Length: 145
Image (spheres, rainbow, N blue to C red):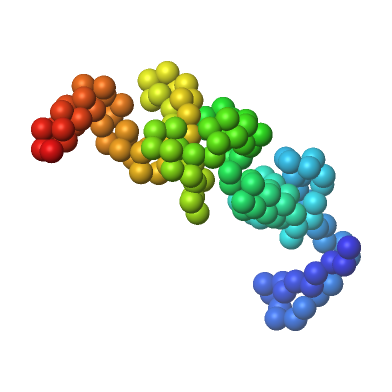
């Protein structure tokens, strides 16, 4: 590698000093020894590793996989669930629109219950998955007819 010139504090001229060692750093991801200009000062990964990591996460499948991982699902498992439900919401039967169906899960046990459209998922969340509240809402709606 070419040594970069530096300006000593005592003079204002650029100097290529072959005796001056280039600081090195070991990337904790790829385990390679890199020159300090190939690493960020405050990070343990080299610039190349960070770039590849963030690029993989910024792809649509990378973001989707990260989201599904929170529910213990893979993309294949999600797709299988969607196929079993014919690509429609488990409550209202509406097909997915520009948004994918949401993963509905029990907030106590964490078990995945099914795939819901955004409206049904938000509604269940608003009722805090409480059956009594849902029954009260049904009673209210039927009494208003």
